[in-house]
Image (cartoon, rainbow, N blue to C red):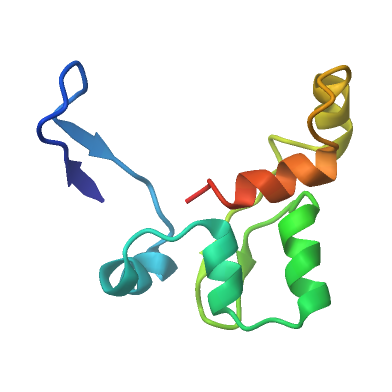
Length: 104
């Protein structure tokens, strides 16, 4: 997807976003949605939604809505825990959940 950026100094005039082909119809209809928003739209049982939002997904996941959310293999929980030690901000689970609100 190509996005034209105007009135921003110091930024490129064109940026690109890679998305799953399965998500294209939803993107055209609703715009880019965070992983968290896609989980909300999927109308999953609360326990399944929470599992997908708070644990490291090792594979792409197709939701009942037809949307796909990407894997999180590059951020395994054990590696995150080592990186987050001493920050006092997040557990690995909290970081994964927090990133779901910002990942598109």
